[in-house]
Length: 410
Ligand SMILES: *Cc1c(COP(=O)(O)O)cnc(C)c1O
Image (cartoon, rainbow, N blue to C red):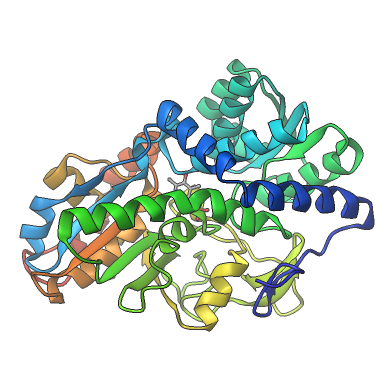
C-alpha cells in the first residue's frame, strides 16, 4: 500500500472535503496504535477474555475420510462472541475509539450482524450507538434489530434508494459529516475509503496469525491451500495474511455465485468476469455495475456476501494472481451445509458454507499428506429460517456428494 491508500491501482479515499480532517485524524490515530505493541497486546487480551480467542483449529476427521484426499482443518471463527469474525474488527475499533476519546459510534448494517456486533461493543465500552439500516432490511431482520435496541443502540431505518445496505452506508456518511467531533464511524469490512481497508485488515489479521501457528503445531507444516468466503473480504483477508508471504500456500477466495455466475443473479465481482473497475462509496475497486456505472442488484442466499463491491486489497491480490477466485451457487451451499452438519456436527453460516463448497471440490484430488484450511467465518444459527425453507424444497439434493469423488458442481 502507498501513502494515499492505494493497493496497486485499487483503493484510495474519494471523500467529500468536509471529511478530509476526520479521515486525517483517524489515519493518525491508527498509525500510532499500529506501531504500539502495547495496543496490540491489549487487543489480544480483550479478545481472549471477551471473545474466546484464540479460536480453535478443528481437524475435520470425518469429512477428510469422506473425501479421501487432503486433511481438512476448520478455523472456528464461529466461536467468537456474537458468532462471527466481525467481533475482531468491532472490538479493535472500540479500543481505538477509547484512545481517540470519542463518545459515540455509528455503523451501517445490511443483514444486521455488523450492527449487533457494534451495539455489543458500544455497550461494553459505554458508548452511544446509532445504527443505520435499510428499511427493507429492518423488516427482514427483526431479531437483530431487537437485540441492537435491547443493548441500547438506536436503529434508524433508511428509506432512500433501494432501502438496503448501500443506502445505509450513504446515510451513515451523512451523519458523520455533522458529528465527526465526537463520533467514530465503525466500518464493517475491508472496503470503503482509506484507512478503513488497512485498519480492518489489521484487526482481522489475528485470524491468520493464530491459524499459521495452529496448523504448524497440528500438521507439522504449512497447508497447501486456504479457503475463505468473500463478501467485503474481511474474514478472507484475516486468514490470508497469515500465509501471504508463503508462496507454497495457495489462497482461494469464494464469492457468492447465487443462481449461477452466468444468470446475472449473483455477487461475484472477481470470479466469472461480470465485475468491472469503478469508483463508488469512497474507493476504487471491482464493482458489479452496468455500462453507465449504475450499481447492479446482487443476489445471494447469504446476506453477508450480497454486496456490489469488494476489498481493494483483494482486487489487487486478484490482479497479481496471488489469490484465486471462484464462486459457489446457492444450491451447492445447501449441499455443503448438510454434509458438514451430518458428518461433523458443525453448523456453518451460509456465508462460510461457500468456502466449504470449494474446499470439498478440491480436497479429493489433493494428496493424503497435504492439509487445507477452511475459514469458518461464522455460525449458522442466524440462518435457521433460510435453511429450513431450503430443506422444504430440496431441489439441491441432486448435488449431493459421492464418497471420494469430486464435489458435484451445479
Ligand atoms: C458479514 C459476514 C461475512 C462477509 O463479510 P467479509 O467482510 O467478507 O468477511 C462472512 N461470513 C459471516 C458469517 C458474516 O457474518
